[in-house]
Each structure stands twice: as structure tokens, then as C-alpha cells.
Image (cartoon, rainbow, N blue to C red):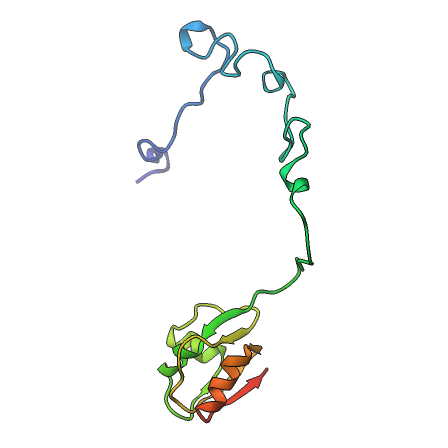
Length: 146
């Protein structure tokens, strides 16, 4: 294969529609902009969320509390999933990734209490729900905050 023989796959490229080139093209006269109005004008853009002067939805709905935009989301894993390990094992994010229980744990691990734990494990995570910690300790294991 030579450089001059390369071509894009059939159907992957399309010719751009040429607007305003006569009525025979189907895109003449108003060139697909309709008749009059703000969107028909040159430079006639409407900003995101603008509702024609009506009070926008983002300003109408009540706002409460605080949403930390810098918060790092923790990867959640349920207590029931920890039964995949053997008795006495040390469970941390790396061990869970190795077993295929979680994919990638960038910001830390949080253990939640869904399911039951039947094995004595030492679990190392960034956070535990109260009931998850109780279940781990009830099974004879340890919940260590890392």
C-alpha cells in the first residue's frame, strides 16, 4: 500500500451542505433559518439557559446546602463482596482490584453495609459506614481507616 492509495472508509465522510445557493438546492432563501426572529439574524445567539426573559429554571428552583465541587468521590464496595477473600486476609483497594471486584480506585475506598460478611478479615479503607464497620467487627475482623 502506498501513501497515494489511502482513502477514508466509504460513508465516513460527507460533503458539507452549502446554504443559501438558490431555491433549487432546498437550502436557498432563508438557508434553513426559518422566517425572522432572533435565530434568523446574523450573530443571533441565545446563551445557555436563557428563556426569553422569563425567570430561568436554574434561578426559579430553591437552593439549599453546600455542594463541594472539589470533593473526591470515593469508590464504594459492599460488605457482601468481601466474602470473595479467604479467612484472615488483608483487604485493601489493591487486593479488590486484583480480584476484579472494583476497577480503579483513584481517590479512596468506602465500605458500605449491603450484604453479610461470614469471614474474619482485616479491611483497610478510607471510610466505613457505621453498620459496615459493625458487620466486619461482628464477624471477628478489623476495620482500619487508612
